[in-house]
Image (tube, rainbow, N blue to C red):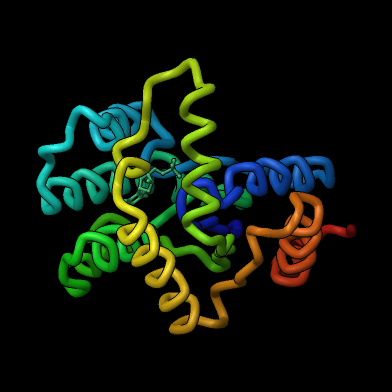
Length: 218
Ligand code: TMP
């Protein structure tokens, strides 16, 4: 089996920059690495992503939203993540099931047991071995995310960026709560540091955590 690492954090925390740097770092050291993301990561889940993030879909109910995340994940896990792990690859996923607890439970207020049932159904036995939480003040993160959306040429994926600051503060609190519940799986890095400082912390943790057969030298 390979090794599964997920990245989490509020909007604009810098996790996407960091996951790309980690992909380059591991690939340059000869590892076979799959970089993927949620929602999305395969054709069907990318179509669901477009529905989920389209700001015109402001009427979407919290339950419909939850079920769409679960169905995108079920497809992504079955089609992409599990086969890559079975092939012995390192999988780096930009958001995974912790995002559903942080956003749909702590953010939207959906019961955590319901989310746990859907996450288990969608993931089966596939769970991240290491989760990097890029923690950042949502006020700072949101202003970065809005600048990125303004300068982007693609579709405006901003349904969550339009949520109130208090929503994003609950999401951040949710992530910190999850990290405290599972200190052996989560590593928290400070998203307010420079890109280089954050990456130095992440690469050090990853190098320490990789199993013997996938180990790399810095
Ligand atoms: P991204 O901006 O990191 O690509 O993530 C897309 C948005 O989807 C982000 O606002 C967080 C949200 N999200 C959830 O609400 N629940 C989930 O389970 C996932 C994976 C993402």
